[in-house]
Length: 230
Image: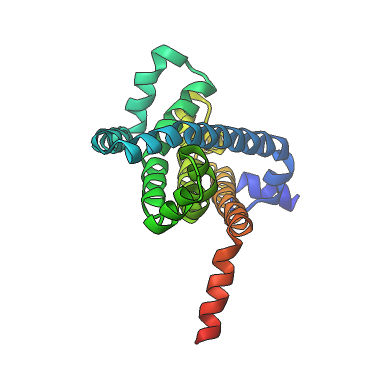
């Protein structure tokens, strides 16, 4: 009876809500994760050639960075309205909008990471007979990886938050639950969906941080050496 009472009294914390709406929460979380993952993955695929273009052709750097910055400033409602004729009311509409929003973070961090690679490292690799492709994949990208991963973490956390805006077209994952609960101010649903969204962002950031540490073991060795020197 106490569990049902919390629904009647509209409490913020309600175990009965979690029990009775568990499948709804799972479905919304799965949709949220799917949209976020798809947007970030496609964003990486699009951002990488743009970053290479901006780095290798300085005259294109300004337009590329400027365009991605302008895209990020477009309000979500306007962005979805512009994309609506092409994608309709679908998950693709939300994913495409999120991809466009992620580009400014991903491209800038990729360019910054590649530009930070020491010139002597490039010269040494060229002296050993490395061609442009091998130089990029075996020297530049590994050295730029910390900056690239930092950009990926920021873009992922940002996308987790922005995915909720997809509730405008019914494709917002946990944002759908928040949107549905606001008219009646259903406290338990608003709080639960919001907390799950925050937990998703934290979990994604920690996961990517773990991947970064696995891919860049030399940064841990360097940090340990610095602590030992002190």
